[in-house]
Structure formats: structure tokens, C-alpha cells
Image 1: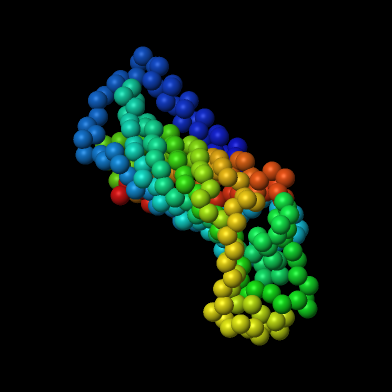
Image 2: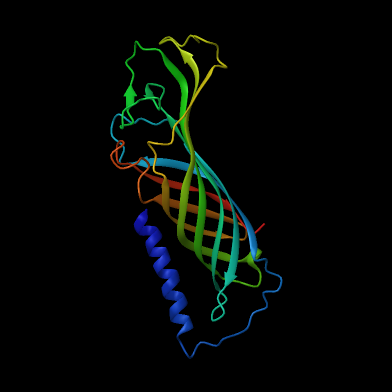
Length: 244
């Protein structure tokens, strides 16, 4: 995943500099007056943890939802290319297997993922949610810069984030045979940021047409803090709506 995104960024940069420095390439001034500089970018898709040990068992559709406000600035030498930067909020929900319990109340410095035996009571559903303040930066390519709504697009970049909140949310505490103990509406929510990486460094890539694109991301610096648990990275795939 990381190699794919780095390769896409290298291709974009090589294409830009090759065209900008080629004296035989005609420089046609494009009319970008109808192209908005500010864009709302909405992302939704699936997440997975890589490198996780056997004790970390996930289940269901782990997912993310991101909302960013981006400023897109075309390059003067080659208006097919632009740099975009902005800010917004990104959230990730990792859903755990019902026999895996994550206890954020632990007083130790290691976040344990406890595998419950078949005779133990358990929560029917449990997820880990992290919410970051993000500052994404992208190098973009448009096949038709004058009509971005009818253009093929390619983007690669990096997303830097600061952790705002982290918590586990568990629902419906049950007996081993599935009988609810406190009622199906029972929810146990525990907030604790100290086990999770305070900084998010994610390589990103997108390809699409018009306002829709497929996106991917690779968390470089780890899901948990160094020394506070298993070394795991996060990969993401999803759909982006941008240019609104």
C-alpha cells in the first residue's frame, strides 16, 4: 500500500517537472475562471489493521468517515497540476470480535486485547473509535482543468493529524448463550487517549472522474503509541466526493 501511494506521487511529480522543463511543450493559457478554488471533500470507506497479533481479532465492517475543507491552487507553468491543502475531521471505527475485549480502564501502559473463553459473559458489539484533527495536502492532476466535473483526476499526498478523542463503545452485555444481562440498549463507553498515537501520519492516494474518486490511505507511524501495545498500521479504502 505504501509503495503504491509513493509510486503514484512519484509519477505525478515526474510528469509535472518533465512538462514544465520541456521547452518544446506549448504553454496554452487555460480559462479556469469557472473552477472553484475551495472544495468540500467527504470520504467514507473501510479500514483494516495490519500486523496485528492473534489476540487482536476484528469483525464486521470497520470504517472511516472524513470531512475536509480544501483549497485547490493550480500551478502557473502547467495548469493540469495543482496543490491542494486544507483541514477537517477524520474518524475511524475498528469493530472487534465479540470474544475480544479491549479495556481502556487498565492502569498499565500496555493496551491488552483479551480473548474471552466460551464460558465468559461478553458484549455483543464493541468498537474502538479515534477522532483526529487532520491537515491533508495533495498533489493533483486533472485531464481537463477547465471542466473538473468532467475530468479524470489523480492525486497523491500526505495527511497529518492530531488526536482529539479516543474511546471504546460496547453494547448489550450478554451471557454465553446470548441472553441480555442489562437489556439490549445497555451501552458502556470508556474514553482514554493515552494508548493511541497522538500524531497521525497517513500517505494518501486517489483516482476518479468528476466529483467521485476511489481513495486509499496507509498510516505510517502506527495505530498505538510505541511501547503501549502491538505494533499495527492501518490501511484504508473508500469513496471520496469532492469538488462540491
